[in-house]
Image: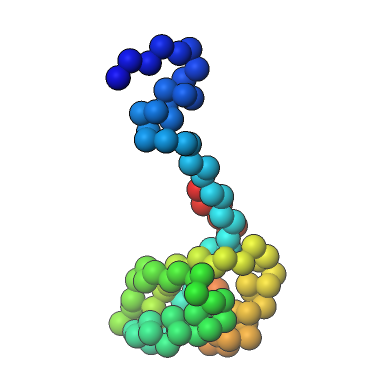
Length: 105
């Protein structure tokens, strides 16, 4: 390939196989949630029902001593107050930990 151009974006497009892709930015709310019990399946089902298919939950740790499971959850929701309201309505026996806004590229 012989590229004779001073425009590096043209060169990068050609080397990359075509037009440049735009990076999608996704804003969401992430939080830690500790639920009773060692089985995370019921909590995951409630999270999927409450926040939709866009919710992702990962097990952070389980504690046999305290009989609980800590989850890290990301939702598609952008409003922290809405997330907290949904959590208090659906998880009366859970403990909410750190809540943050996250931007993903």
